Image (cartoon, rainbow, N blue to C red; front, side, top):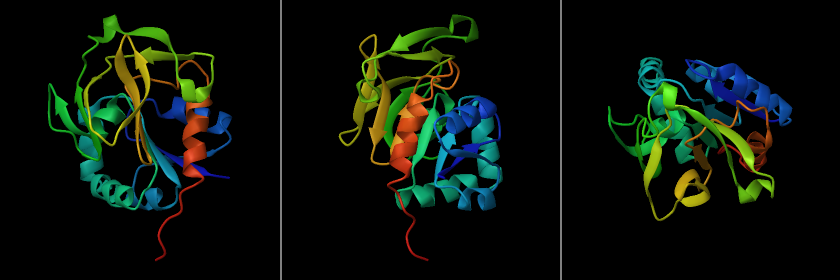
Length: 196
């Protein structure tokens, strides 16, 4: 069974763990570099990007994740996770990992009270739209040449892929539909770490 880590420092950890399990994977909480070594892919959940990033740096997870991404390690960031992955983020501190060639604008959809649920058409998941939540969501305002836009909402990219990196401005874990996580798991099964 594919072991999918969920960065468990802050944010929607349990919701992602439930979706990984529903998608057929084995969820694993990741808090340390040692935990990271035992997983086949990693989800960076939504939450407070500054808080998550600070804790990642404190525990050395930032450099460990960057190194694994250089090997082709599968990484899936949602909302705050996308901000941490981006090479550029507007409206706050610089992003931490800088592995995904996009520019994002933090909290571009508004404050907590302006958060909303929506249905997004994601062709790679089939004809039925995906129920998601936009919670203090970032906007992707620039997409690099090697980044593929997998879904748009109101004319803007909301789901992108760059090699083994997958990122969404929305929360796919809240409505209970595991298709997004299943798609990530399918990509993870094709990855193998380099020989020691």
